[in-house]
Image (cartoon, rainbow, N blue to C red):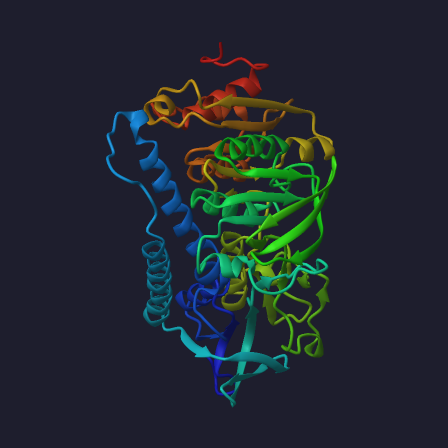
Amino acid sequence: MADGNFDADLVVIGAGPGGYVAAIRAAELGGKVICVEKEYLGGTCLNLGCIPSKVLIASVERLNQVKHAGALGVKVDGKIEMDFDAMIARVKKIVKTQRGGVCMLFKKNGVEHIEGFAKFLDANTIEVEKDGKKREIRARNFILATGSSVLYLKIPGLEGENVWTSDDAVFPPFAPKSMLVIGGGAVGVEFAYVFNGLDTETTVVEMLPNLIPMFDEDLGVELERQFKKQGVKILCGSTVEKAEKTKKGWKCTVKGPNGTQQIEADVVLLGVGRKANTEGMNLEKVGVKLHKNGVEVANSRMQTHVPNIYAVGDMIGKVLLAHVASMEGIVAAENCVLNNGKEMDYRAFPNVVFTVPEIASVGLTEGEAKAQGYDVTVGKFHFRPLGKSMAAAEQEGFVKVVAEKKYGELLGMHILGVHASDLIHEGVAAIKLEATLDYLMDTIHAHPTFAEAILEAYEKAAHDGKSIHTL
């Protein structure tokens, strides 16, 4: 489709979940597409984030299930322990397989993959460099999808061996005897769950009053309770002021609500912050505007201030989630190829933390809804009394729904418990479709299932705290 003046209709820079999805969608729509990636297909998500961390979590979860199988009448004889090397080998195998899958999708859809680092020469031309060799590529449109990288916190004295980031923790060389996790957001709590499950004495330090502070407050409070039951030490409202190297690891000075204390750990894991990958691309030279968190998009069609250059994913600093990046990539791809005015809708995207128990959220928290002026009604139902929860010995957690009181429109859903990452999509669809409690309560939910807790939460929100199975 590209004419003699252009090598492609679209060049996508970056092959993470935003970039590779955009490239494939544009090719499906008939565009001639090139995807430039300086390192690995799949980006941070596949190679250093979502996928390897979830493999580790699955291994630790299975280990704990076997350890506690006696509660379900299952006899397990002998020593139960993790084969650390086998676990890491499985992580690497799955990452390699997934990466190969992206490569095959590119071939199937006719996307040309070029390795190297791209920088702009003008708004229609980039130079790609790999091992000292350079190649110029001209295209009608570009999608920037270079993602983000870990941000190193500047803590006095904390620099050197056994200071890990999430990039290190997904392929850990060993399971330390003790670990201090700085940051109680999604990254911090997921790795805290993993290493605590590997018998590492684990402490989490979070600056704000609750764990996972971007979620509904009730979720953070309950996660802290569950983590303490599992043996994780939690220090919220606290900061690491300085650190010093010891013979065994690190001694960190932590200041909190009750004063200052010293915490020693073999490894310190930095679980806070990421920065957009924009350096060296000559973006501002061609008119792309930047802000403190990355690239500035000019509209909901994902265009930058240069009309033929679009940007998606972590590098725009809006919502740092792989699945949001993929949808942004689809929106940008359709606008590049079809020019159909497709717009990104951020009202209903799920946010998930893969601890055990899982956490999932969509829409407004109770606090956000009230701050925006809504008169809200809230329904909260615990999994504990459900027949399926008892049968599966998975009774921890709850479903919380937030709705507008007068008309009953669902504004938010928040879940802590087993299969929360799957259950949340009922809330995603409901909010996307602007569903009301009346309609949602009339939706039949199968019995016995964990999803019955959602129905009960709808009823409690609509009926002043009353539902069929509330005592």
